[in-house]
Image 1 (cartoon, rainbow, N blue to C red):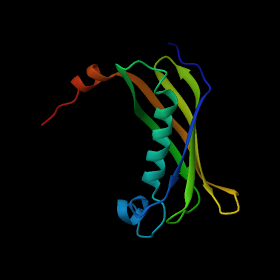
Image 2: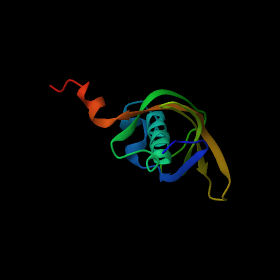
Image 3: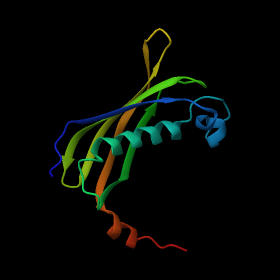
Length: 132
């Protein structure tokens, strides 16, 4: 099946202690860690195309450009979305964003950017990995 943009995906996450910069050693303040924001964005890029590719295929990250622009605290709800915007052969480009959902239902953008993933055949890809 040929992929065609746009394909969206989104999910809500609750910030836990494991998601904080202090837990991930990416900072010394108790706010949502940038690496976690990126991981959530990548999860949504995968979710967008997971049922669009064969079981023998997967996608792997190639490029991440994400700006994390606002702090988010413990217990906050974060809505993360990805939109497949470009298909160039096996290369997939997604626009990603994350918003904190405030108690009054307002949304505060906390991150935005672009993630590029590549479709690969699982077995062939793993053959290239040296396992100790």
